[in-house]
Amino acid sequence: MATAPRDQVHLQSSSFIRTHRYKAGILLSCSLVLGLPACSTLPKQTEQPSQMAFETDTSQTSLAQIVEPLRDQNIGLTGYRVLYDPLEALAARIQLINKAERSLDLQYYIWDNDRIGALALHAIIQAADRGVKVRLLMDDNNAKKMEGIYLALNQHQNIDVKLYNPYRFRKYRAMDMVLDLKRINRRMHNKSFIADNQIALIGGRNMSNQYYNVSESYQFSDVDVMLVGAASDEIIHSFDEYWNDDYAYPVQEVVNPRHHGLRFPSLKQQLETHSQDPATQNYLDLANRSRAFDQWLEQNIQLDWVEAEVVKDPPSKIKAKAKTEEHLNFQLLQRLEKPEQSVDIVSAYFVPEKIGADRLKKLANENIKVRVLTNSFKANDVAVVHAFYAKYRQDLLENGVQLYEFLAAPEANHLNANTEEISKKAKVSLKGLSRSSLHAKLMALDQKQVFIGSFNFDPRSAYLNTEIGVLLNSPSLARAVHDTMDKNLSKYAYKLVLDANQNINWKIKKANGDVQTFTKEPKMKWYQKAGLKLVSWLPIEGFM
Image (cartoon, rainbow, N blue to C red; front, side, top):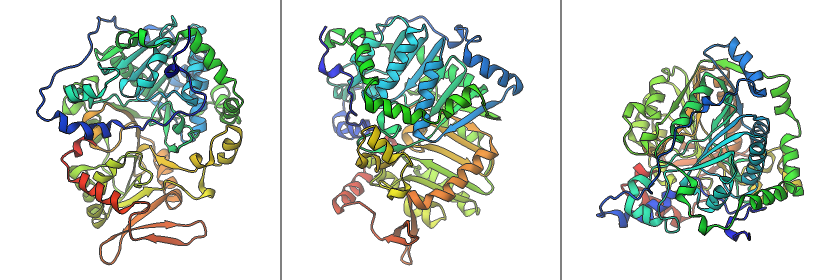
């Protein structure tokens, strides 16, 4: 059957989907929503039998043979490995898919119809063909361009696809915003990847080009953590909670197959063709060049084993029914030790609200070094968020909190070491490879604790979206985070300082050692400044 163009697997990078693009939709819809009665637009759903990950016996898998002896030596602890490099992060995912023998449970906010998305789907189909049971749970907010592909995937006997918190009006999604904004405005922002119930990945990375250094537009600077042991089990239980929730709809109950011509055999062939493309193969070769992940997994697995706690939102948060103490941010605050020396926060979208700003100011006034790294205006892929972050800068700086803003275009000698090689061999534009945006979400306290997850330090993550993360009681990792920031902040970020007149200046250290000072916000036009100022007065901070 002929394939509908909208369902084709693109061999080139599609136009990027902004991680939080629905925020703009909120702003456009607010005037329409006021005064309209709330009415649920959720589609009808047939009752689904519960499925639990541990019902599948994975004790005899190759991954279990590697992991279980280590767990026996470290009862009650969590082993971790942080994935900073985007190529290693991609290699880890592909290799774990390739090594899975019984199950793959994948939960994401974004899965794009692009090079990375297609690579991962190709590997997943190969795993399903081997008999691996695959559960793919996607938030529906960014699923419009993928829904035909999800339908086709779902035709495989070993692949089940569900869409979380779906739109009812598939072609006219603005209607759901108008009629049911309270629900539509809340999204499943979790990212988790689980192979054979043995190894779990969580963090900030979705399945899209910009997270793995292959986008034509810009690259996200992000971080994941690979977990085994106690924390991995908690992540598995969390996946089951969402998979069995009544907001998780089988794709065939939401998407009308008559609107999509793509069928599984055609999808499989397209993905196979894509995987054999020379540029795609070159990129995979670069990601796997060192074979470091394979060697680490099969020959010399080394993990730091520590006490760890998974902090996560329940699905009921989407329904606005979760108790405060069930929220991730509440759990995190309860489990953090009182800092004595330093706090480092890295957050792509940083809107502390008054309560958060007051906490940071209090710490700084107690002679604790508090540093916050977030996006500069030019680097922020959601400009409206910058308006509400900027409201707090002056006050934070006056009270001793150190602020740094990520550069949209670092100097050439500070780019990824593989930049030129990726451009040449994988056919990615140097312009796209030279532009960056911060997407990481982590925090380090003293030489004690590190948080890594999907949680941004903003109201949206705190009160609206569901999130997941892990708190690692790891002095070595905390030291590494602090040291990395010490070493790299001057290369990749403006330092904000107050001049003699208490005006904000932006300072950046050049490669030759000179310090350049900007007295006006870098890369911001006067009309952009005026527009963001106007937006900052609107009573919509809770949407950010």
